[in-house]
Length: 527
Image 1 (cartoon, rainbow, N blue to C red):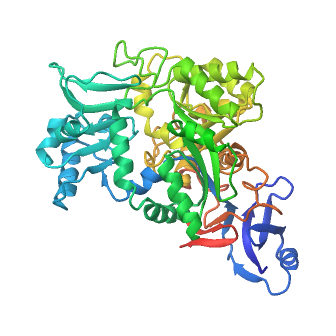
Image 2 (cartoon, one colour; image 1 turned 60 degrees about the vertical axis):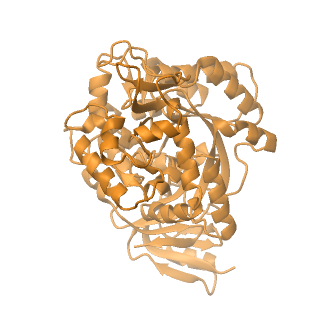
Image 3 (tube, one colour; image 1 turned 30 degrees about the horizontal axis):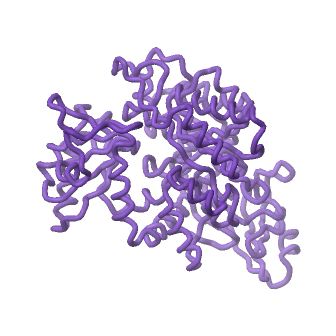
């Protein structure tokens, strides 16, 4: 098998035994040597190909430990409302998208955030009807926990004044009891079904396009949160030889029965496509006013959010899944939701059943200070997204004013001995991990505010932040023996950049661009 030597770089291996090297020798998908150029050429043997890195900085490939890649892929082809600063601006974009085609198919997209509008009032179906009444419209908010639909969409979803509320969701209604067009949490289940059906035709093709974008920002692995259709599309890409990044595929709670019947367990698969934990929702999101909190949200007296999954149901799901060898990844944003799922983990752990599974809490944004140590004691992984912190500064200061919580407490978790992994939650945020590194190290927005960072005592060092995108995601997926560090025997997954994040001004981290992405020893993307 021919070998390749990537040489003349400044390589951060993250291996304590050899932190810096100038070359990597690769045979097949694995690293056979790291070190100086001469030793790597010798290990590669005669006839090895050579790639001159020309002084570029090399890092282990980054992992996005929380991404909705099917949603991200679909959103590339749908109406994009991110960044809109007013209802009028959103409607302009929607009208333009609707005008492109005379089709009566669903108009999908999203990314709107009324919290950032000049008049922060949630929109209604009537607003949508003005610009698009002839076809159904469904537009999830930026956090994905609120969906804005028009009147025709409500009709097709069979939602009207007589539709009862469902557990874990809310149909927002006007003074006359009529749906306003805002659906929260489980109330939007019908929309999610439509999204899957509409996007099913060429999801594999859309993911093939999306993976190139992910490779271009330095991602070599992802932990995907989307549905069974997404897994099937990745299986198609893999079978065709077109899968170019590694996928740790979580199981939606709706597919638990199927997974158990098939005997599918966390860790099954190979280095390219692997089964992850089961995803359950404990609550909603702060921006949608649906995260589950101990105290009521400051601008909504009596509103403690929505418990999408109750405490006993969460425990029962945990017990069923774990008994079958499936770990749990519980979405929890509010402090009460985090406490609820930690209680379930602690209760299950006390039974002594199914040890060894690496359970996770996704987002883990706002926690009771006393719960931070429980992450470490229970071995629960905190799967967090640093860019959420800097996007939500205003919301935290407004909605959680007076709450005794630790918000985005990355440093406190690490100090307590907990495992922290980072991702993006794309398409909620941009999947570029350098945006996440900047947020983790500065706790500032892109323009450098607030000065000194938001709650600066929780800022990370660049070394800690890089580990959260490399070393610890490999641990979370049970692959610490093959990923996250560049040394002999590990998978040859790495990236090359022109700016060294370990020495760069923290303010410049966000602007670092990737020159080269290698997965399995093969250059998969190059600038």
